[in-house]
Image 1 (cartoon, rainbow, N blue to C red):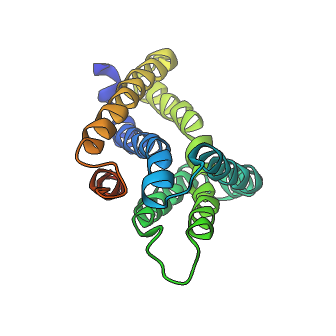
Image 2: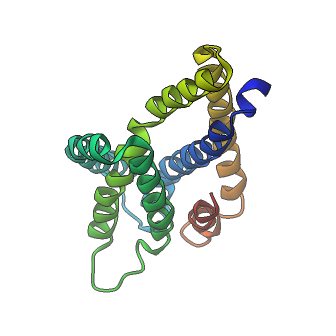
Length: 194
């Protein structure tokens, strides 16, 4: 871990991926509560599955475009643009259900479709970027430490992944009902800080 933390590029990359991953896990975890308690759909399982299918469908549709763009502009740039888009777009989940004149089902499905855009680069390029970071480390140190980097990345990722449900549960204790949705809404606000 210490050897990885001496690589300034890895130190910059790691938090971005960890916080992004926590944000995605929290959005995924909050979706059934949002669908049932805030948007008040009766069958939250079916609606949640539909939302996920729309987001993943968009990811699949736009992925070839992002791969082509990465060949032209670089993986780092596409990853950075995806991260910027996610940071701007994720907090808009707060407004789902508040937009007058548009049915909530349309609001959430449109949100899910555009959610697929940042998912494409942010789910595709991290491992390739770690490979680039290990090549940089090899040039710098003369040692091949791919396993060390992937293991360190995986350890931090899994630790953060285990903290996301705990943070979600803590926020939901503040309120997760139609009458008191403050915990659900705070998850949306919390994503803005991640």
